[in-house]
Amino acid sequence: MSLVQTSLQKLPATASGFTQFIPSHPSTRISVKFTVSCCSMSSPVTVVNGNVDVKAKERSEIRLGLPSKGRMASDTLDLLKDCQLSVRQLNPRQYVADIPQLSNVEVWFQRPKDIVKKLVSGDLDLGIVGLDTVSEYGQGNEDLILVHDELAYGDCRLSLAIPKYGIFEKINSVKELAEMPQWTAEKPLRVATGFTYLGPKFLKENGLQHVEFSTADGALEAAPAMGIADAIIDLVSSGTTLKENNLKEIEGGVLLESQAVLVASKKSLLKRKGLLDITNEVLERFEAHLRALGQFTVVANMRGSSAEEVAERILSQPSLSGLQGPTISPVFRKSDEEGKKLITMP
Ligand SMILES: Nc1ncnc2c1ncn2[C@@H]1O[C@H](COP(=O)(O)OP(=O)(O)OP(=O)(O)O)[C@@H](O)[C@H]1O
Ligand SMILES: O=P(O)(O)OC[C@H]1O[C@H](OP(=O)(O)OP(=O)(O)O)[C@H](O)[C@@H]1O
Ligand SMILES: [Mg+2]
Image (cartoon, rainbow, N blue to C red):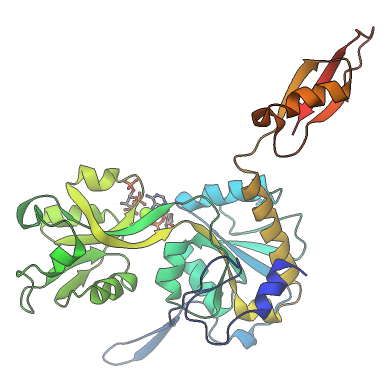
C-alpha cells in the first residue's frame, strides 16, 4: 500500500494541527478562515479568494499550484525537473502549464499566498509553497495537509527582531522584551510585520500584552530606523538584511523554521479521482530525489587478476566499499591487456 493511502487512513478526526503524511513528523493544527468579509458604510461587500461553493464547480482535472514569482518560483521548477517532472509552459506570461509525465494534471502559476487560499477554497488540489505561507494564510485549516514538509530549499525562519541600539541595547530575549516597563496601553510596543496572523498570536503567547501592529509589503527592516516601529517580525535567512539595518534577533524570538513544502487539500484527496495516485507519484519522486542528495557514485579503474581479487582489496577498506558493492566490470579493449579491469563502485 502506498504511503499516502496508509497515512490517509491514519488521519485523526480531530487533529490539532496541519495533518502530515510523513509519519515521523508530529501533527499540529490551527483553525482557518478563507472568506474575508468587509463592510462599507452603505453597501456590504463580500470578498472571497476562489470558489465560495466548491461543489458549484465540478472539474475532472487535477490542479497543482506553483509559485508564479519570487525566490520560490525557479527553485520549484528546478526540483520538479530534477525529479523528471518538467513543467511545460508555452509562454512565460501564461499562468497555466502541464507536466507531460503526469496525465490529467494542470499546473497553475499563482502567488504563494494565493496557492494556499485556493487550496482552501477548492480551486487547487496540490501546491508547493513555503511553510511560512501555509502557516500564515492557512491558519491551521484542517483541510490543508503537509504531504512533504522538507523539500530542502527556501530555508528561512520567521523571526522577531529589535534594534541593537537605544533602549533595546541590553535586551537579548523575548522575556526581557516583555518585561520592559515602557510598554503600556497608551504606548504599546509597535511591531511591523506582513505576518498579521502568526505575529499577534506569537506575541500574545509570549506575554506581550501591549502591542500595536502595522503592516507593509516589503523592506520592513527600515521601519525601526524610520521611527514607524520598535520591532519587526519578518523572514530571515542569511541575516544580512537585519545586520545592515542595525537590527538583532533575540532568544526565543523565532516563530517558525520554514522551507518549501508540498501541500494538499484533504477534501480533494478524499474525493478527486486520480489525485491520490498522482500525489503518491510526486511524493515518491521527491523522496527518491531527496534521498539521493549527498550520495554519489564512484567509478575507478583498478588492476587485478580477477574480479574476486579486486573485490577483496576494495572490501578490505570500509571507506572505499560504499553502501553496497563494489560492482565490477571487465574492460574490453581492442587487444586485451592481461590483468586490467574496470571497477565500478556504487
Ligand atoms: N530571505 C529568504 N531566504 C530564503 N527563503 C525566503 C526568504 N524570504 C522568503 N523566502 C521564502 O520564499 C517565499 C517567497 O518569498 P518571496 O520574497 O519570493 O515572495 P514574497 O515576499 O511573498 O513576495 P515579494 O517579496 O515579491 O512581495 C517565502 O514565503 C519564504 O518561504
Ligand atoms: O536574511 P536575509 O538573507 O538578508 O533575507 C531576509 C530578507 O529577505 C526577504 O526579503 P525579500 O528579499 O523577499 O524582499 P521584500 O522585503 O521585498 O520581500 C525578507 O523579507 C527579508 O527582508
Ligand atoms: Mg519577499
